[in-house]
View 1 (cartoon, rainbow, N blue to C red):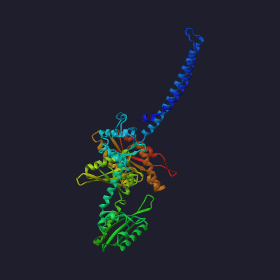
View 2: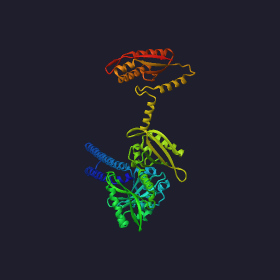
View 3: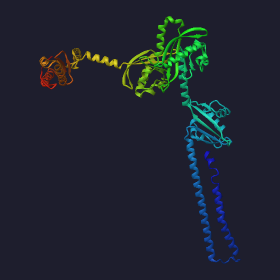
View 4: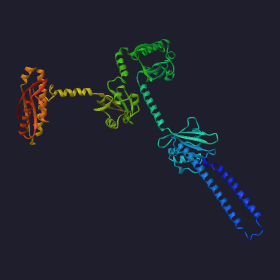
Length: 587
């Protein structure tokens, strides 16, 4: 349809030129023929051969000339048409590659252009459109296909022509923004843009905002926030409304002097300045305020909230009426500290996850180590968005198991952090809604890497010699018991060797105990090399034990021979040549 309009009028100038040229060529030839006819003799019985040949040659020349003109006209038309087709193809390609659907109509509302994106949005094809189809017929086609929504033709054009346009909901959940523009020539252009992702983000933002407002509204303490620049309130929760008797709509946009009595306003402003001037951006105090002529004592904490440039931007204030509970000041202070520390300062990572879609709703500052990102960036994401596929699969499986159990699950597992692979003790607890269905999953992660390493070292020390790092007597007896149980009733054989180091006392007396300890370390290494996988343990000061399997006593005697030769070789310790011997017994 678009090509038809773009081609009209392109061949008219060339056709005019061709007619003029043809007329100019035929006129002289016809004049020549007429002149010949007048000059011809009255008798036609005899003709001069020269005249015949001249007429024939003239005719051939005229025909050739006319054929050349025709070929030239045909070639010009073909070049013009190719140029027009290339131009049309370029424009069509540009329009078809837009991310918006585009429909153009003329003054009679006939569709003169429709790009591919429009057809793709509504599941149509070129075969669904016909020549001289108008806009109302196209809307009727979409209505039959179920991709128009419940609007009439008039409502469609009226709302689409408004500044905000018209949003239609498709059966598959997509949202299409339509804008309609009337052109000066009476025609029109309509654009169709898929805004599903934008609407999804807007709904997520609204859901997050509603969640945070719900949390703050259910906090028993009075919570409010104000701009540091002008001191005007920008937020107040339900407890704040109940305490002062003001609605939040009345509070927002006003400062303290516009809301409270002069004495209370002055105290509030002084407390605000103290918080802004505090080194850590926090200030706690207790002061009296005038509430409708009644003096009330409040305990307050003010926190300076900084922006991404680390500059103070907002002042968050939390206070409670402690007039009737002065005797419980210690418990109140403990509760206030809990409220203050619950978000950022608890010693474990805290993450709150929504069960229905697995998205993170809340994360404290300690959780940033696990998430490898700021907690604000993690809100709204899932485990698949944050962790690599292998880790995400394991985390999701553990979450589903906890949700299915609807109780507390405790386990230890490694998690990749910016400090490397760390071992965490994870507790998962499911929170049920009023209907008894899982709604939230609360997860705490405690880094127990150092603790487990310490426990591992202690366990190693309990079963290993501190000097040679060989298994000690307890480990040797445990290994011996296991070997006896393994070989019992199987016909397998093993041998136990006891090696007593000779000459250690003389080495200690001559060179000192420090060199004697180094000698024990060297002996332990040679015994391990000779044992070739057998159990080697240090039983006491100069006594070692070995366990070796195999055909006995051959394997045991062979090992005893190797041990004697290994220990008999000279030791080089601190530049000194030291010799020792070994006495070996075998069972």
